[in-house]
Image (cartoon, rainbow, N blue to C red; front, side, top):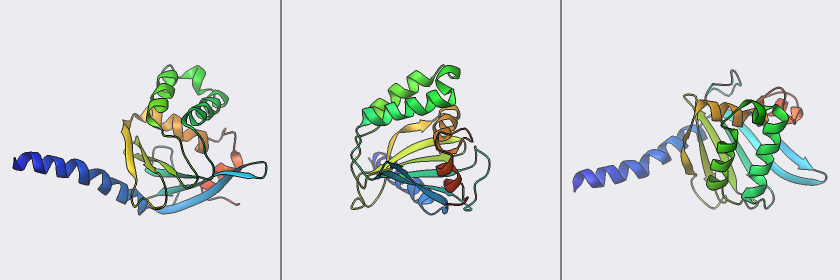
Length: 174
């Protein structure tokens, strides 16, 4: 009985502890994606030391949505960005990854936050439905290094479709 209680406590406590770690990391930069006069989301990049470095360094990308976006649109936007970066053509796993995202991501509302945290070369999605929710909850399992690198490339690859946002996220000029 005690073992079962301990196991339950660890399953509930460990995700919160992991989330608290990256929430304490220092901000590298932030950026806002707009579409015409509308704000789509604000984003923030954090690292343990507040500096951007190699792609495989520990980092957290936190996106705060400013409008309703359903999961189909989120997945389609990911597909479009991977297409533009050549990832769809080069990575045989990309279609399976998109299916995984379709099953994993929620529809988002204004104020919802979706975070992707890279730690020890593996990523983890975290979600907070609103600022009223006190903590982030993990979404799905930790992701492979290959997926994690490709996902963060949408914002951080030098060939991104949003070079100004990249520059702002990695601590450059606004």
